[in-house]
Amino acid sequence: MTDTIFALATPPGRGAIAVLRLSGPAVEPTLNAMGAGRLKPRTASVRNLTHDGAYIDQALVLRFVAPNSYTGEDAAELHLHGGRAVVEAASQALIALGLRPAEPGEFTRRAFQNGRMDLAQAEAVADLIDAETTAQARQALGQLDGQLSATYAGFRRDLLHALALVEAEIDFPDEDVPDHLALTAGPVLERLADDLRRAVAAGRRGERVRDGYRIVLIGETNAGKSSLFNALIEREAAIVTPIAGTTRDVLDADLVIGGYAVTLSDTAGLRDSEDPVEAEGVRRARRRAQEAELRLWVRAPGDPQGLAADYIRPGDLIVANKADEGMAVFDGEGLESICVSSRTGEGLAGLHDWIAQRLALDLSGADFPAITRERHRLRLTEALEAVDAARRALAIAPEMAGDDLRRAAGALGRVTGEIGVEDVLGEVFSTFCIGK
Image (tube, rainbow, N blue to C red; front, side):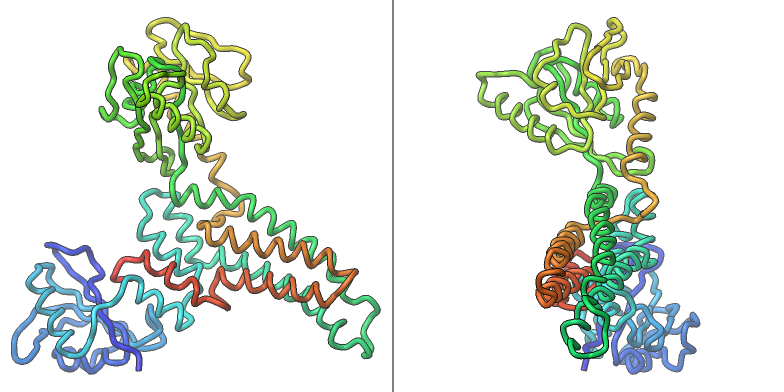
């Protein structure tokens, strides 16, 4: 029999209200034992909770009957006064009555195992809890609502349709079926491959919304990168001095621009140096420039093109800094430029707006929400490779095409948890907080 579990579903510590969640077959006997029996399902009722004659608290209690609960099991919520002593007394009473504290993600894992949600929706619960921006919350809500799962289900339907055509030719060669029936799966697989290819290509977008969009400041020493960094994050995080080479490591700061999470990085000035410490900082700056989604090339009046030009890509931005010392014009790089002054604040609002527009362009889309995790992207890539292999095998050996299509179906099934899920369940639910 499944254990009955409980967990604190509100932040630990002192508060106005603390909520303990219960789930499992012993919920009803537990409520009876604590003086909260015979509750009408899904109706909040005030009860005096006790255990072994000791008064615990006057609580608001809700009872949910399987399968109409979050986990699909009998469940309950105890809305207690938020003092630590009250929560501790209630928890000890539950343990004495045979319940055990839940593991991280165990409530949502039970919801998945009981068919209340698929694996992609379960991951969305964790993403929604962790969401710190409107874009992250919007993406998680769409995924929780089943939009991402519906996309995967469409891929799977097309795949199974093609597999049925292939299997019909293999299993019933002597029956009255059209000649070369397997070949009719070709157009279906071609469309499916195109859809999978677009999904994989757009996969980074959803991950960037979830994990943060990386912007790096690069340029010459003394171009004003650290001053601009401090101005953009609105605090004195980076050390600023007139001495060239002051910044010798990558400094990151998280902020929100236009509703999107951004990680902004200040880096060492790009130059050749005999100083081993500065040389290491330059190496790290180069690596961060290569990894970032957007590079802001910070340049001051009189700056040469320098080593930063080697890392600039189409779509990056030149930030002509120190506008208060004289307006600089940089031509020939094929990039947009914005003039700012970190000291006076001139142009910073325009730079902020430019970044916000760029984020909206890169991270929003009609197929929102996109792939949100590397796990999804790897499985879709695996499915795409198998579908392409099946397309090549159709005219040569339909039975080989069938094997490839079953492999593709397995890869898609592992995304939503329809098949072969044991190897991913631990990875998925280990990131959850206890009360979920």
